[in-house]
Image 1 (cartoon, rainbow, N blue to C red):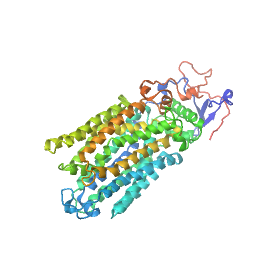
Image 2: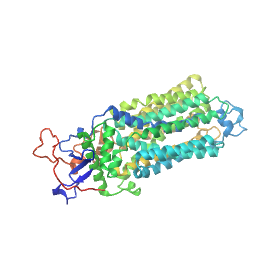
Image 3: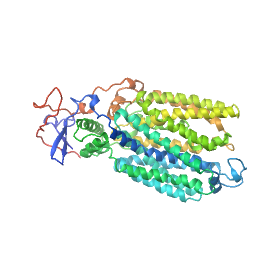
Image 4: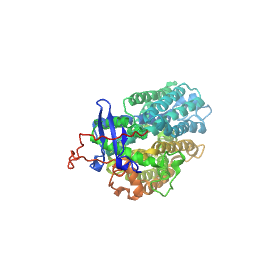
Length: 570
């Protein structure tokens, strides 16, 4: 694919007026003549079953993420794990059989060390995704490093070895979680991008549920298989993801950024389920290229460049970084990982019967609730889900806290479980998927990989902080906050609702390039009313050159390609 300048615009500062795609199989040239006869709705091809299947499989990475995050809750509550990794001398109770347990700092370290690794992995993933590509980063530094960490965890005989393994696994999970969101956002059709990226959150919930089920099935074993089986199962998810990604194409936007336009056209045609010379593919590719060229006028954006432009400028780099990192921070502030990391030990602490089963029920609710977002995120938009989801979670968490401090009757315990499940429902159908969807949409192409990486790193940083501090503020021999911690989560959810109302724009139904234009033109609270009036390819020079042989009524492309001088860029 080459740039072809119009003679009248060679010396201008505008972009060349035409892209030419060389088909080496039949030596024919097809032109990307986009935008003047292309309506805004024709920028993208109709969504095909093939497009759904390919994008949905990319979401499978969420199973790896979810399982790795979820299995530790069950393992920490296992009697055999406490015997092998804990210390004697504790009072013999239902949650400490034989008097074995581990110190609060050990529990905090075992849980949080994974998030420390994912924080580092997410940070380096932005560089790797731009350097070697989205797909290779997920397979190599992602799944490959992850499996090394799993081997160390399985072989570990002490807390130190287990923590080393979880940290290394975290490096892989960090790469996978950041780059997978980037990849899915770039290949998913705009009409269903929210639902497709929500499928990633759905896969996370499935992973958490599977971890809970495997833990529940092995809880009564009296050998190391009780916890080594749940740890070993992680291999399966990494292998499936690695093998499957070999049949998926690289992101077309990555190839455009690398100036490899023929590969970009082929990749785009595959994910859209269309022929490479289809008008839809030509139109969409021209829009992507025009946007990329427009953004690259400012040059390569360094990491320091992410923090430029002024926080009050709605389309500045630093404003987008602030929105992305804050959104992921607040997803953690909803308190959801308190449930999925410490549910078994928390339910044991508040003296609920069968805490393993209750924990598994919350994960099942999580799974069943997430598909609601597939419809809701495209029907009601990202912004509404974030605002009203936070309000609903706030109410539920205050109710859980009030019920928890009101007594310890069987009826109150049932009410507590019910409102915990309702809270999980609202998280799974709103903030769970919507926060990931938005960070995949708000960054322009030159900073997208770095922006998504930094936002994901923010998620894992606060995930780590919460994992560290929770045992110290909740455990009976420390802060002894217990169920009153839900007053904290309820308050932070109220803050989340205010943040979403002030800062988060509505990106529903827009291409990634249109999102960039929208954020440049209107503040977040007016974004729902913004309607695109033109395209990047129209504004920046990729226009039809009508010939006398072409009908000006139906806009069909001329079968004859005019002779011109080709100029290759890159």
